[in-house]
Image 1 (cartoon, rainbow, N blue to C red):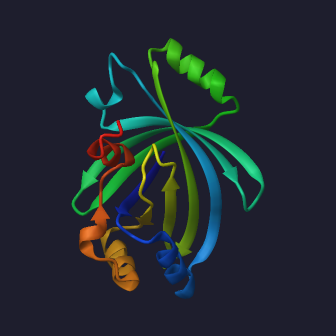
Image 2 (image 1 turned 30 degrees about the vertical axis):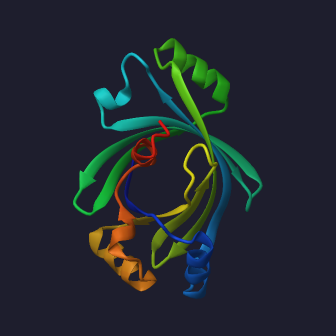
Length: 181
């Protein structure tokens, strides 16, 4: 189980912020193309009994020329000013077989989104620059993953990010706001 503390930064120019991160010493640690499949049940949505979502992520790691497939249950624990998630993740070898197993268990709803992600190590934080396909989420954003709220505030201050651009919402919540779900 992995614990992450993160926020999203919305309303940014992704190319400008990437240039800024690099100019301030950010180190590229990942360049990926992802296919994310949200898994749920029409009759008993995961959100109705657990503040979480289930996802299968196929990742093409461009830097290392490798492919991965992970199944993740991402549970949310809301904290003031930051989003805390507990991730239960396992690597799988066959996405179609996993989807069939989950379907047989009652998870009969899938939604697929395509994302490009560049990740940087910056001030001991992980910064992901995400761009989804137009139908999944039409606006690029940045995720900042940190140790604690103090660390987050240091990174935000250094990058000169306006407070009004910071969100603790999940991609699912952002999509619902745009009526994409």
